[in-house]
Image (cartoon, rainbow, N blue to C red; front, side, top):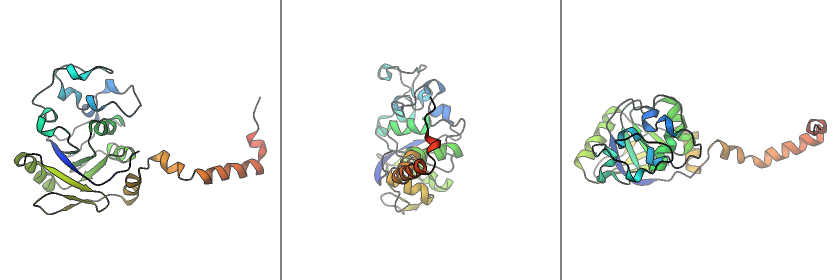
Length: 215
């Protein structure tokens, strides 16, 4: 998992509440577990006018020009702002995978579904919970300012924008540590690789019968 660093990113607004994981990445794309390649199919049913299939070349598919992420002004956006209960529905890790593969580094909403929220941290995507009022302020800014961007500082736990006060946000210290250091569950385990090897070596000496190969 890549280390999460502070960044200044273009903001894209998705003005919808209760966006579920099947809308984020439809079920037909769940066959792969490679964690990459899902970006073209993020919000597939909203972005395109036909039904997408795994392995399909999306470059020639008819697009829905009214969908927000298809508008040229939001190309390259790294921050997604949306409404309450984002990521509800089934517990698929493909949802944060697709957001990351598309290019998003952070998602801002008044609330998230619990499993999606946890999956974001485990895969390097930062979910930021802000009040309804602060989220609304950001939505209005995307409407009034061309190329509206935010600076997301995880270390300082603050969101900054030009001409306005910083907006602080809360994040669990352990999750913050893991993101900043690029540690998923496997990475955390490997940090103790020497201790694990030492334990196994000692166990082999103390209880060799436990390691006998059954023929």
